[in-house]
Image (cartoon, rainbow, N blue to C red; front, side):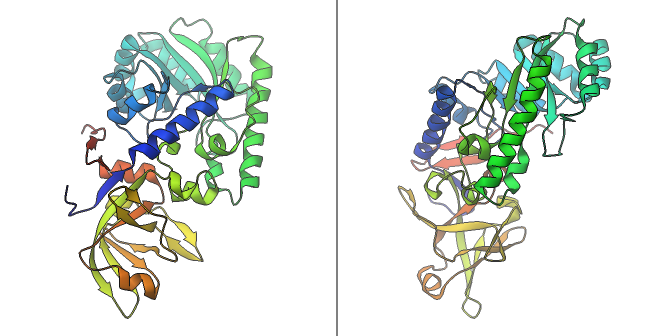
Length: 365
């Protein structure tokens, strides 16, 4: 297939190996593997997980839960705070599959008592340091209020405590990731110790890719929910979560112009394809590493060559004199994205190296 515009390439072999390695890690630590499907959002890629005995997943929206329930998944956790405006959709899903939701306030319990029509599981989302959403682990009053109010309501089944240590993405070293992980484990373990006698079946669920990739201490944890690991990206590479060779997607972009004076290369590939996520590279913003594309995939990233600026459709690459002379107008180069989740969400489909088009979930208006 001839590529003429930005196209998200997928190395299926790397992707399947990433899935296999995380599934094996979960099995070796006696953990339930509930991968978060928000990264790939594809029914076809979802099928690959079943080859590694995965039977439960997490998603980031009710709409995504509906999409994957229609594609063979019947044990789904919506890993996003309960939105009472979607209660009708939740009631329908709960009638069809084993569904779990996240609760972060006792007010939600009162609403559910009046409006829930089918049994669902729920986790209390706990904030262990990320400060995005969830109840602070120290807020025993609110946690206790949710548990007390839900006790005698037959349609609510308490599953346990769930957290996402997203602050690990902002760590400056693996040592800092280790510290974040252990602090989160301690807070979750304290909650388990406090409530296990009342709820002997309660589980602890954690979910960030850096901790799940790098750590080997999962004491008292029952479930992991990483998502980004399926593709990995430059952010994960810089955190040490993966090697450059594990990154399974690259955005193929046409070279449309060159600026000899500034050693800049202009590509057709901008913020609407890559997002505006960046990392700092030698003090400069980096929106993606550059690789040469081959039929068999791509090589390691080019030295001192990366996207330094993005507008809507344009990408500006800074490079060395040597690489500048090797890249020509009309070439197709590859960009390893900073954040593969956002790039996949923007591009809406994948092209495998053997030229199979894999669709992405299409959102409803």
